[in-house]
Image: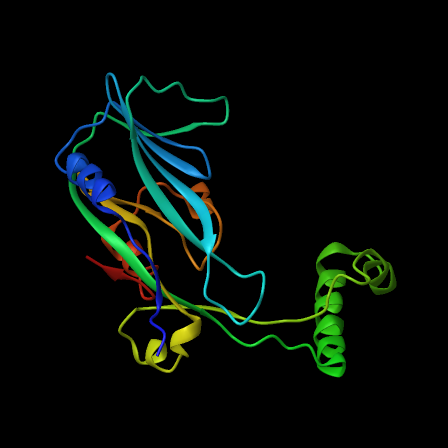
Length: 216
């Protein structure tokens, strides 16, 4: 039986994570697809990237995180947002999830029914006539399926077909003084868009978003 596909941090990345523990970066920056820990003459970058996924659907991707140390001074772009300065990283946890995809729904009647529901929804939120939306997206909808993320050892993960299952290290949770920085991909979405709402979370706020993840 085929094993689950794994996208896990390698030994070099694990050493870089260890280097971050108990460190005090000059600054921590956010740029949607990256979070950067800036030091005097080097920086550590976490980047959201797309990888091959085991799936029954041809174009599905697994979104994971690469961690690298870069031996030069960091120069933030115009889009970079400052998270914090000179704060101690007192604790780090690796975030791991189980990813799988449901079968595509491609039967014409079922797809048309789902398309109709989607078009009605778009019409409500955009004040555009349903007929105009249908013209815009005509020919673009051919199938539907769901992306599922859950804990690797959960009951839900054990029901999935092994040949279409993925175990993924999706980032880190860092404790910075009395708050938490969740630098991990959520629900197989590209980038760290959740940080746009709030960079640093309380312990109670963190608990609300980690139900589908294993912390190591």
